Length: 367
Image (cartoon, rainbow, N blue to C red):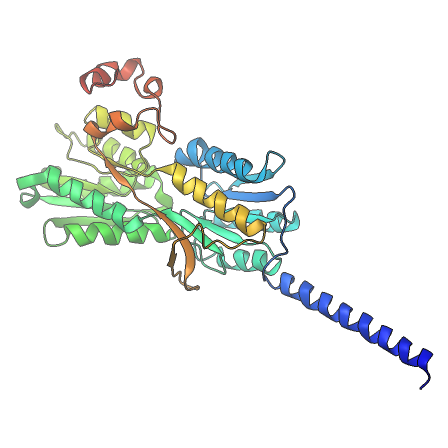
């Protein structure tokens, strides 16, 4: 072989090797491997599960959007969709985000199990997925939420303390959340760890889709079955359901409402607490949770590691050692409200103390 031919062969081999390496890199990206570092403007998708719970539109969405733009620049685009409690709609929304080639995706799953195939699709297209608030299944890259079992324990402990000696004088009704939400099981497990053996649970329900109207119907059934004189307290997993439960209790003619728990510190719940209709809620600081989701999504979109953000790990039904940020929740009873008024992720004095609730606010020292 002459020198010219040998040189040509070397060039062909080098080009072939380069092409092969490029193909390997593309295959790695397509298979959900580490993305190339990206420092330019980003596009990040945000999918929230429903709009019946006021927190998502009022707090989670704006807080996440604000933090993403603080971290990645004002030119960053946040594409937002709300599934309105429809798992199939949310799966279609993930497909749309994949088609639009977002750099990362934050998902609060309607149904943690059924979303797994959509998470796999996003991952296969090189889009890292951050599970927000609910631990979705599938190859998610990071997760942030509150300490959900602790939420249930706080609710159970608060209910026991309020019941006092009455705990032994009747039954409580447990109104858990939706079976499609993994958090609901953790709330329930936390509450049971506190309540079991200390109260009689007369009736217990898993409430379809967390809907207040479903909780209302369940509560009507419990009252009919147990008799209103037997019910000394109600464990409600969240504030929306607490509203439906309290409506049922009032309709049944309770002269004094039994203590009812809640979660999310919704505006209507805060006002019910001031009015002595709802006993307590659980305040979950939305800002640290939202900030963590934004930080994780931006880091993953830019091809960076998350170990500086996520200091712990959790296991899902399909994945092990998912990098995680877990936020501490707090009990919210009437004396606690004043310390949170006006803080980011809570309500202002004007929002809480409308004309209808002025007397209650004055009595609670909210001025």
